[in-house]
Amino acid sequence: MKAPVSPLAMAGLLVVRQQAASVLKEIPVATIAAHGAEAPHHVIKFDPIDRRAFIGGSDARIIMGNDQDDLTRLWREKRGEIAPQDLAHNLIVQLGTVTEDLNRTWYQRASGQTVIDIQKRVRHPVHRWMAATLDGIVAETGAVFEAKFMLPWAFTEEAAADKHMAQLQHNMWVVAARSAVLSIITGGGKWVELTLHADPLYQHLLLTAEKSSGAACRAASRRSCSGSSRRGRGWPRSRSST
Figure 1: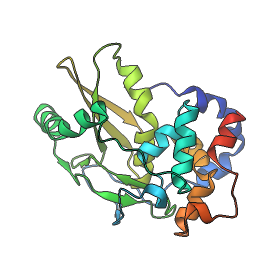
Figure 2: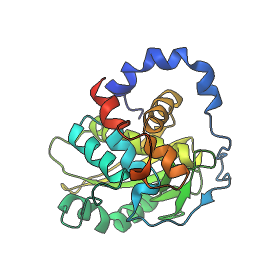
Figure 3: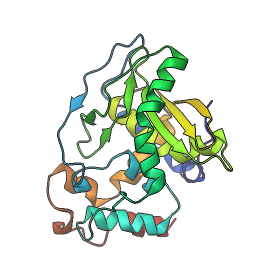
């Protein structure tokens, strides 16, 4: 199913249309072809604990979200002002971690397809500050594979797609994939598979939001966020003005 465009994306629709030329320029330089033929991925090694050096898929979800507190906390993390959030005692996060292998196995059994490149870390070939840690790539199609655990109450496919849209669009952009598979296990014992396609409009808006932070430039130059002369600029300020 194709998820609806988020309110933030709708708000930026007119602006993005006026920038159509730049949208064409931002199309990834590589693509993943059908039949499992993959474009070269830029494999990288980085410290997942020190997330100041890159913007990942989970960061994208916060940047495109509506929680000002989360946005401010992420900005301060990128600047090195506070330590990364400790998720060791977040039960939902831990449930997602421990069920990831089961989720992937269930998807492969149900779909007959194979997931490769599990937990592979890649960086965008042009925007070096964009990175992704993949749950996997579907070998037969080149689609990004993402495994999630969600609570059963108030669960809908539309809400699930909307919640994870930014992360999936970010990861698809990083590896130049045309689609993504969202494999969900709920606490009610239900398994759901959703297929989402790369949305150039959404991705352009996402890229613009990510680039609006000085952290992106500082990550690209491998400098500490706290040492930038662009202090005071970035997500919290731009988000509060929208």
